[in-house]
Each structure stands twice: as C-alpha cells, then as structure tokens.
Length: 595
Image (cartoon, rainbow, N blue to C red):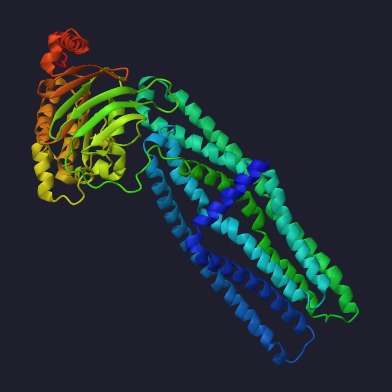
C-alpha cells in the first residue's frame, strides 16, 4: 500500500510538472472558477438580504445598494462562468497538444527496439485514449480543490464577523461534505479507474489486432470466435464503468445531504444569536443561503477524487514508456559527416535481450565505398539483425563497426539514417497519395524530381494511367497497388533520398519471377556508385556482387564470389541447387519460378 501511495504521489507530481509551462493559465482558470462560485454565493446572500430587508418596509433608498448588488452579481456570475469555460477549454487544448508532442518525442527514441514488446493497439491506446483521459486532470482534479479551499475561506470571512461559531460550523460542514465525501468515494473506487484504463487498452489492442488480421480471421472462419472475445472485453469495460457510475452517484447525494445539514446547523447557531440581539434578524437568511450556495464549490470534489484514480492510471501507462531506457545510447558529441562511406565490420556479436543464443557471433567483412556485398542465408540466420545494427536500431554487444574511420556509435542515429537508403520486403506505405509517400524521402523534391524518379523505376506509364497521377490515393499500406508497384515506389523513394549507402533487405521477396527480374534491373541501376549491402535468402542475380557472405545461426560459414562458391560443395551451392530445382518444378507446374 505504501508503495502504491508513493507511486501515485510521484505520478501526480510528474503530471503537475508537465503543466508547469502553462501554470499561469491554470491559476487563471482556478481564479475564474472561484470568482464564478463567489458570485453565486454573493448573489444568494444579497438576494436574501434584499428580501429580508424589504419585509420590514424600509425606504426604497435603503434597498438600492442591495438591488444593484443582485443585478451586479447576477451578471458577474454569467460573465465569470463564460470566461472560466473559455479559459479552461483553451487550456485543455494547449495541454493536450503539449502532452501529445511530449509523448511522441519521448517515444521516438525507443523505436523500434523498445516498442517490440507492445502491441500496436496498446500503443495506440496510450497515444490516444490515455492522453485524452488526462484532458480532465488539470481542470476536474486539480482545480476543484483549489476553488473549494478559497470558497471555504470566503465563508469564514463572511460569517466569522457575526460569530466565530458560524464560521466554524460552515467550514466543518464544507470539509465534511466535500472532502469527507470525496475521500469516501475515492476509497470505494480505489483501483477502479486503473482497471478501467487497463480494460480499455486491452479492448483497443484486440480491436486493432482484429482489424489488421481480418482477412485471415475470415479465411480461417474465426471471425465469430474473435467477435466473442471482443464482446467479452467490451463487457469488462462496461462493468468497470458501471461500478464507477454507481460509486460516483454517491457524491452528489451526500453533498446535497451535507448542504441541507449545514444549513440547519448554521441556523441552529444563528437563531440564538438573533434572540440575544447579537445579530440582526435580516442576516438570518443571508447566513443560511451563503452556506447552502457555497456547496457548489465542494460538489465537484467527489468527482475529482473519483477521476483521480483513472488519471493516475493513464499517467502510469504513459510514464512506463517514457521512462524506458532507449536501446541505443546517442553520443554526446556526434562525429561529423564521414569523408568516405566504406564499412568495416570486425568480430560483430549481438544477443537480443532475454535470449541465450547470439543472433550474430563473430561476423566480419569489409565493404569499400561503392562496393557490393551480399549476405545470404536461411530465415533466422541473423541477416535482418545485421541491418538493424547498421541502422543503429540496436547497439551491438561485441566487436566493431566502422563507417569511414569512426566507430558507428560515434554518429548520431538520425544523421546516420540520412546516409542510408533501405529498400525492404515490407515497405510501409502510408494512407495518402503517391506524392505524399514519395516526399517522405525528400520533402523538398520538385515535380521534376518526382517524375524523374518515377521514370527510372518504370512507374511513369502506370502513373499516367491513374486518374490523378501523383495525387492518386493508394489506400492504407498501399493496398491499391500491386506488390511490384509497391516495391517500385520504395525504390523511387531510395532514388529521391540519394543516400551514399544502399541496403536491400529481401527487396524482391514475395514477387513473382518476372516482376523480380524487372525490379532487380531497377535495383542494379540504383546500386551504381553506392556502397551496397544486399540481404537475401534468394540467390538470383548475385553474380555481380563483389563478395557474398553465407550466414548460418549468426556465424559466417562461407564467403567469396558467386563463381567461387559455386565451385565448392558448401552451403551456398546447396541453396542454389535447391532453389534452381524448385524453379524447375514451379515452371513444370505452370507456376513462376524463383531462378
């Protein structure tokens, strides 16, 4: 319990710290909230005095100040309420914008290594739902207690001059009705807010995962079963919300009860004062209505405390990611752009966290500037791991990787990735136009640059056939395009990026033989003058490589040119013969072969 309390307090302080740049706006919103309730209290008190005094039939001149006060406080209440809502909503939007930017900036250095353990739906829930949950933290959790304290002090200032006991009774009932009820609601709902946040995150993860795999669910006839799972998760969210709603309903009821009891208690103290002549009778209604109207301020406290748990749960989920240590340590003083772009890898070793088996073990090679190196091997051999290390998605455990004369760790990750173009088997295309996806590689590219890149990858004729050319929408993940068109678009990106180092990571996987042949021709043109690393398990077109490394279980088992490896009876020759035989069989069966 102590640990939970300490963690909650730490989360609370950190959430307040995020709002520090707009603390003046928060103070203004709290003051306007106080001014609104204070105007309501003054309106009720002035109206009570006006009615009580008018019953004694004094001169109309004696009532003019009270009459003007009723008009003034009536207008002021509406004006302050408008200003409070305006400032509060403006503040909320400012805070949400700051939170989203802060979270994204904190998240970006963690990708992709530290985010692999999280489902995309869970990440989406944190980015969207959890941040939106914090929308009410500063106005529905932080501001109400401040307003309640100020109104309690105002009550003391108004009632104590008549009798200190009146001030005592009013403040005690305000504390009991607002603070006591809030503590009770908080105690009854402890953990409910966090459970609601967790249940919503689980539901969001299941929905996103189901949408991404909808085709497979339908194909395997698992749609109804998955729907039942989503319905169960939705039911869990609904049950948690129902529990919170029942508990939250206690707050207004207990506050109303406290307001009535406070009014009776104040009257019980005030009436004897009138009898003894210590207080004028016209103030009797003023005292009672002042206390009753003041409960508008404390009525929000139970809701604030009930929302506190949910907000702390959302904050914990955000800080869990923000506090994660990046897998890659950036250099304090990054090295400048290298004079040449050759790679030297010596005894490279890397083991994924939680794994006992090295993904790479003692890999060495030299790739001169403008040279071509192929790394081949079966799936799981460590080829993609090598790419991730070169891109600094992970830091290697052993050995050395040099770009030019400097160690790879000496370069900033962002700068390093500007010098490397990657064409992979799973190129991500965004839900936008062809132009949008091309401009990711070169935001300042002109229309002529785009047209030239499209022509080089033979997309120009295809684009002319589209209704809007470069401005044609291609759908999520580029589903409106064929596999070959998506790969050509990826190559066009690499052309626009014009980086000195090119990595082709299974760039022709999942393509038929004819499309593969066309794409390989475009890739060979792209390789010209660039330091090129080809990662593949398919051996077509490797005759032009300066050197080929064969990797198995993270170790280099063979190396040499294509002709040298084919002259032996090793792993490479076996893979080549197997793929060639598979291609012959595919051709005989009418399927496109791979070699």
